[in-house]
Image (cartoon, rainbow, N blue to C red; front, side, top):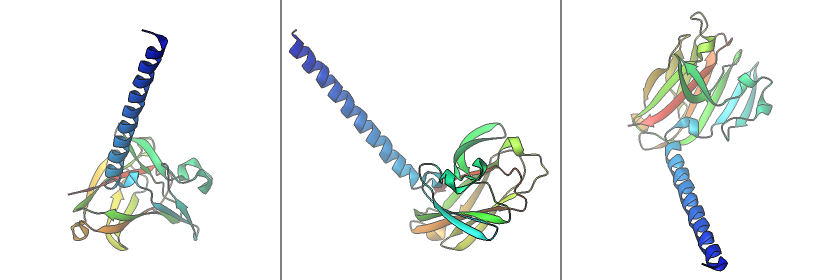
Length: 194
């Protein structure tokens, strides 16, 4: 076999390999896009932080809001992984603010019969005596339910019925607060389900 044929065969193998990789990446991207429509933490909310009577708005993208938002790392709303009851899970880290709130608004979410939430506070800061964290869940500016995350170890499930909005596009707003924000490493996940 001469060099020309060898180069041709190697080039053909490389092209087939690259094309296969491209198709695989596109399939993974499409799968992620499909999952994103039902799993809120994979979407990009508008984040409004109110503290001391001042409200600032940030666009969430690429797994977090800009670090320019905040003076401390724990103030950045972001995809994270915490340990609760010894179990590590990816979630949306949303630390409450002193005398204020953190509001995440997800626009045009196609709802199903239920939004299934899991919430936790990181084991490292749970004492059993700290304040609860509250998450008020709104759909189209109507309060559906308040989730109360107590100062306890574990991942806690809460299902909120949304069947009146089933198969419709709606805005989902989550408002996080606490009576005392000291060491409230709050994290959550949510999925629209039948």
